[in-house]
Length: 330
Ligand code: ATP
Ligand code: MG
Image 1 (tube, rainbow, N blue to C red):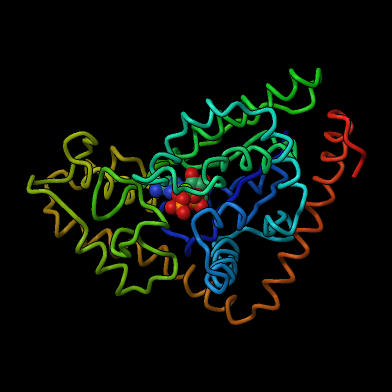
Image 2 (cartoon, rainbow, N blue to C red):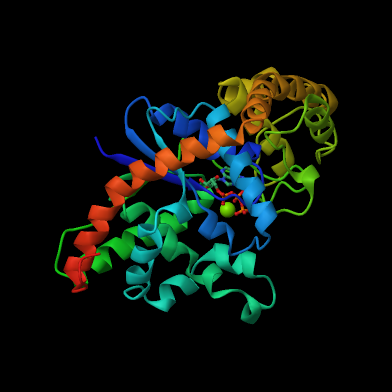
């Protein structure tokens, strides 16, 4: 059966890539599994260092997760820093993870920019904290977008090296679950870059809080090419491929079906249809988010309740880790 863990950073409100690549699957997985969902503020602190913004984003992301259909009666939803076991396990894992493994992580290279010497240490060891997030629940499955595949592989390696060093079979090997048609949604401004919370251009992404006009405008202005008809060709038509993939994911159809339907359509006709579809699917979520954000006390109570549920699973795991490495029991 197994246990699901997944997280999302409160670096900004949730965008369409997070929704299609991760969140939508979180909702489906509640039907079949025990799920633990986390707003990872300690990860966000590696890039977002503004307390007021952090606080706002935590509420906005919590509202987006609930509005998308995560049910707090079935799944635990909480903020990472409220469950101390994550950071405590991360320290232990930092002590068994070779630096060379982290040196290979492409996300660090992308996020650290040109002046790597100035990047925070936390950004470098981010994947170790992520491994701790998963392993502190001994989770077996982790729904993520494609961009997190490398970090998941590292989490498996870290589980294995811990087990080897401490002669145990303590941690299971967590499996990535990369589900759906849109596992890597690209920027609306550049079809070769992933849609991202930390992109400085708001036109590059559709936020779950965008209203109908903003959604339509962003799609209308999305980069396109001069080829007639819509077809899937990541190499030569990255922008057309991205919009086609988004369409298929929102419509619940396959890429091939959408390709057939719009084989002779102009870009502007296709964009109009896509904008209508996106508004139809996303506007109700935005409405529900507004309702939830009007009651921050309710959001806090959900998050506190989720943290208590998470501690009940994580604390005994941390205690066993302390036993295995020779620390006093916490
Ligand atoms: P940041 O730019 O701050 O890293 P992000 O947009 O990458 O933000 P995260 O909080 O890092 O968002 O990731 C949350 C989840 O969303 C992860 O499972 C990640 O794989 C998924 N995800 C992020 N971007 C995309 C995307 N463009 N397409 C599909 N899935 C995505
Ligand atoms: Mg990210």
